[in-house]
Length: 385
Image 1 (cartoon, helix red, strand yellow):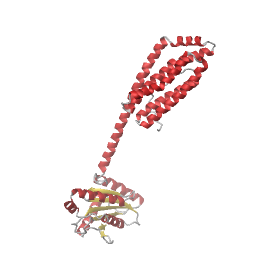
Image 2 (cartoon, one colour):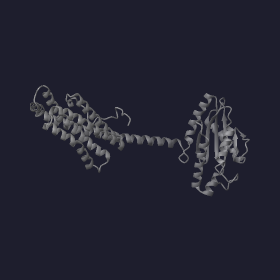
Image 3 (cartoon, helix red, strand yellow):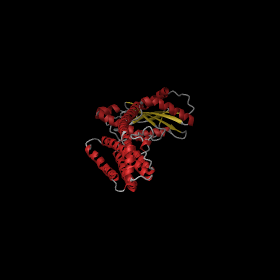
Image 4 (cartoon, one colour):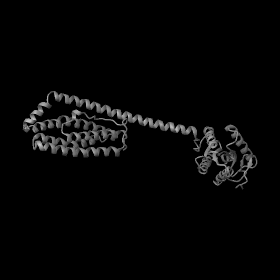
């Protein structure tokens, strides 16, 4: 578990100087117990069973260690006196009471079980420190000043009884109420965080849906112009060429008519995946513009050939061997492409105008036999499969 921020950390049991007994080692251990109790409470925020169990085991282990240390301290002054024996019995009953609570609430969710245990621990520990340990500490102080055990016990009783007992009960009620409200606040904040996370996921999903084609997962037409403008500016800064490849599946209507629209959708998905496979560079962007029309925006340096790249794309899609038995080209799916190559010194920068130019090249490819690439009005010299 990573260290929680102050905003995420709750104190269900705030330490108070009134809990101090005056015995340094015992006070230090009491503070550690309180810290471990708060740590256990804060695991409820994450609702991770392993984390909760580890925190509980750590607290139980330290409690055993503390009880042993404390009993050695009291034994030095009280021997086999009834106060010491009763104190030992309260220590020995601690873990069984916790286990009894776990069994009693075993039918509840783990978080609710731990909440019940935490409430018990807060009351038990606070009362044990304020009433038992402080009473014994007052008696130890008197013994150190020369009082007998019986005299020291009487002095401690006078100091701890009467109005002080009322104060203890009042403080205990206050702590119990505070812990309950803090646990409730923890639940509310955790619930709010879950809602906020779900809302963030929903917004991210909505954002993805707004810029991507739901069928293929490619960018949609809405994202074309922003990406085009960004890449155009970047290409200009870096002295590269920006290329726009407009692709259209040949005789796609025949695929839908001959094999059905479900098969047609599956075909579009396969073409989309192939385009993503072929366009792996960070500067490659693939779009489904609608229907059977796709597009690629890519950047090349002056030595690279966009014609070869476009031809590689055309051949890559043909290599899928997707049946299209009534195509007038070959009995498999093919594409035609119109390509615009924009050099850094090209004066025309308007996406809509450049789109129209690429669309005109695509139209020419369709009219002159399909399954070909035309770049800036020139038919690719590569052999067509």
